[in-house]
Amino acid sequence: MNTIRLTMAQALVKFLDNQYVSVEGIETKFVAGVMGIFGHGNVTGIGEALERSPGGLTFVQGKNEQGMTHAAIAFAKQKRRTQIYACTSSIGPGALNMVTAAGTATVNRIPLLLLPGDNFASRQPDPVLQQLEAGHDYTIAATDCFKPVSKYWDRIVRPEQLMSAALNAMRVLTDSAETGAVTLALPQDVQAEAYDYPLDFFKKRVFVLERQLPSAEALGRAVEAAKAKRRPLIIAGGGVQYSGANAELAAFAEKLGVPVAETQAGKGAMRWDHPLNVGGIGVTGGLAANRLAKEADLIIGIGTRYSDFTTASKSAFLQEGALFININVNRADAGKLEGISLCGDARETIRLLGEKLEQAGYTTAYGDGEIAKLKAEWDQEVDRLYALEREDGLAQTRALGIINETIGEEAVIVCAAGSLPGDLQRLWRVGQPRGYHLEYGFSCMGYEVSGAFGVALAEPRRDVYAFAGDGSYLMLHSELITSLQERRKMTVLLFDNHGFQCIHNLQRGNGSDGFGNEFRYRESDTGRYTGVPLQIDFAAHARSLGAASYKAGTAEELREALRLAKNEKRTTLIEISVLPGTNTDGYESWWNVGVPAVSTSDKVTLAHEQMNERIQQAKAY
Image (cartoon, rainbow, N blue to C red; front, side):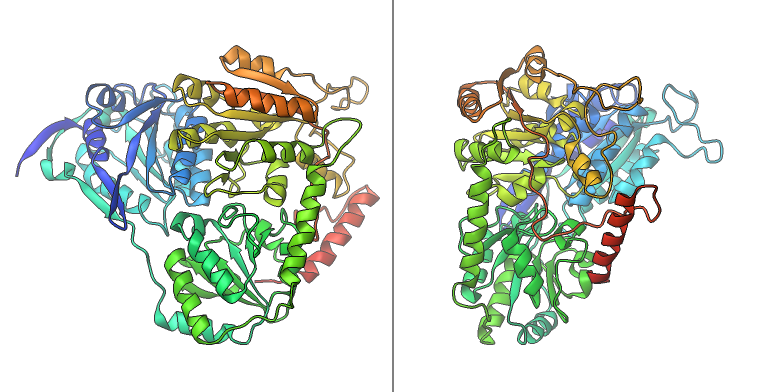
């Protein structure tokens, strides 16, 4: 057996450099590179390997471990899970900074390879700097925190263990049904230890991303059960996008006359102006989709997790005996809401189901022009909100309308948290595929700027816009600097409404007078944040980091800022002053957040009673 003597870290880098995926015969190098911040625990191990023998891997220098890892997630998501960046960190806080991002990847079913440094396997220098010592179990390290948020976790305590661990990591990363965060904890001494690795370990490997098909029996049951249903509704989730099933979805809907509602991950699967696209559904959905959901007796979920936002905390579907047919590669998701499971790839399963239903002579009972009327009414509401003028300032919906009309269909927008995702799912008009990039599985504040950088890496020929509230921007904006360093331009649209206004609205809607969510000075007499709003010059802050920046407080200023930003060659921030509370809300939907059963406030007590009434209406699955 031919061997080569390498350190464990060198062997890992060499292995990753030769992994490929194949989708219908098209091969793609799976690992584009490594994002990292070096410290003790990885600088003399993986750091040395990337410095001396990186092969075809590109190294990207992160500025915050969570930020760079969110960028890696966004890159993989935009690449439809066919290519990734691995992420490496030191031990201790450097590693733990990646835990939130690991959860983000796993919840969203995005492949993410994490390579955190770890304690000395030999235990000779114990305790090393930043080492977590658990008195009851000395095998526990900070990297154990990745276990609940990883789809695969391993600790390499001998250099030869890398071989089985690396293959298992690739197995999970390339599994459409089970992908998510994969963590290989790398003790800093073992990274530098040598082993005679078989040359075969470094051969080119091609992992075929197969299109799984549902069984004939499952298809037959689904078609037979659907025959008696006449008011179907499709819910298009992220699986449509990852499968590349956009054309098949449109053909299915057109052939059978079925309206299509969208989740956050599924938005953009069909053009916004397609006659059968009825828009967002659920808590952040619009009137057309939510009204159709109430009357639907057949719900065909395609690639959706059925989160509480999609189902309006299971209150969206009110028809007795409503049937769910769930198309998903993940068996757990396919079985949700007591649905008929069609475990399979979205594109191929849509095609098969459409053929079977057509052969069965399936027809809907939607009245002449019913769907078109609902869609037209909702389009008019969006037009109204886009044109909404306020004498006291710029409404958030007006700002979104200007941006949507100005940046062009080819642009990609990125968002994750606050009131903006709700407004975007309801109002944003998506034209081109993969132009709408929302992280809403975790709705992780701080993803926006980092995610936009990751999208800019993945889509260098498209304009990329990060939509961030002031709260999200303050929480994490470090990779703005990395975008400048990498010369990957993005435009940050910072909506300044002086606080965590989304949650401020939520608490006030459930009996609160407003507490702890606005960016105001603390009043000495009350001890609470009820003073005047903080004045933060975000444009000046961005300029201090090296970005271009503009300010906009009116519709005209925003149009001009967008025009100027488009002509900039470097990352640009536009600070947009919007009126608090001018986001959208409601549209015949509800979200169960839990309201106190006991309170000194009559408003809270009333909100609790109203919540209980809605809970009684919701279905218990």
